[in-house]
Amino acid sequence: MLGAATERFRTRGYAGTSLDDLVDATGLQRPSLYAAFGDKRALYLATLERTIDRAGRALDQLIEADLPLEQSLKVMFRAVIDGFLTGETGPSGCIMVSTSATSAVDDAEIRARLAAFVALEDGKIEQLLTARGDPRAAAHARVATSVIHSLSVRARAGATREELETLAADCVALIAGAG
Image (spheres, rainbow, N blue to C red):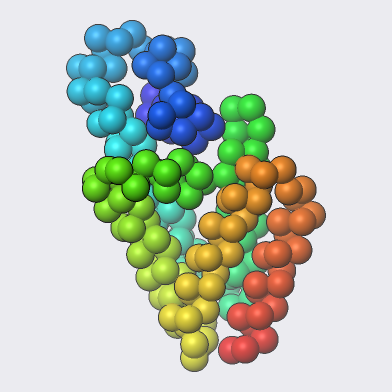
C-alpha cells in the first residue's frame, strides 16, 4: 500500500495527487487511509520516509559489497537510472527530487525530509568513496549526489537511457580518474 502511494505521489506530485487517486492506487477506501495515516499529508510524509529508508539501505548494501571504486559508482548509477526510468505512466525520476522539492518551499517538515535525504546521500556516498580510498571523498560525494539529482530531472524530462548513462559515465570517469 505504501509503495503504491509512493508511486502515485512520485508520478503526480503532492499537490497533483488527490485522495481519490490514492484510493485508486492503494485499493483502500478513504476511512482506511485516514485510519492508517491520518490525512494525505501524513501519507505523503510516510512515503518520503520510506524513500529515505530505502535509499539508505541500498547505499549500505553497496558499501558492504566492497567493490572497487569505479565499479561501485557504476553499480550505484545503474541502479538509480533503472529506478528513475520507471513510473506509472513513464519515467518518474525520484520522488524526493521531483516532488518534495516543490512542496519544501512552503512546508518545513517536507523541507526537513528533503534535507535529510540529501545529507544521507552525501554521507553514504562519501562513506562509500572513503572506503574505496578516494582522497577527495566528500567533494566527490557531493558531485555524485548532484549528478543523481540531475539524472532524476533528466529522466522526467524524457532523456533516453543512453543519455543518462553517458552522464553517469562522465561522473564515474571524473571521480575515478581523480582518485
